[in-house]
Length: 133
Image 1: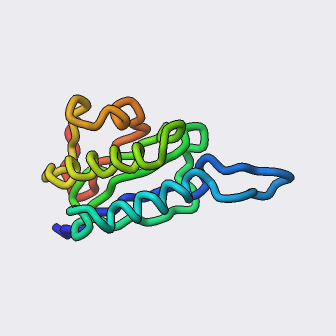
Image 2: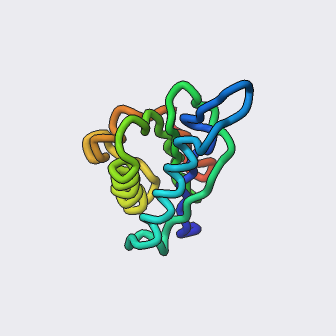
């Protein structure tokens, strides 16, 4: 299994649009910048990378991030706007640490940081894991 983990950050989230054009930086762009800076000084820097994604299709639930890694379920979180970027980024990195420790990526609701408990949009099983019905 590849040890590298990825945090995807939607760049279209929480944008300000006027006459069909984006004005200024979107909330997703600013979250990506803050998260990238925080990760650079975090012990998680060796295990994670932050990647910008144009759109993650959850526009009604900005800002949106996803955790992904080979052999693990992918978690998609939304509703990450409305508080300071520093607080949101810290919660994301706390959740990333939990995700990293789980062999299959499974994170119990009660173990996730408060900010990421109710914001789950989806959990997609890895194609490398057996699916139970």
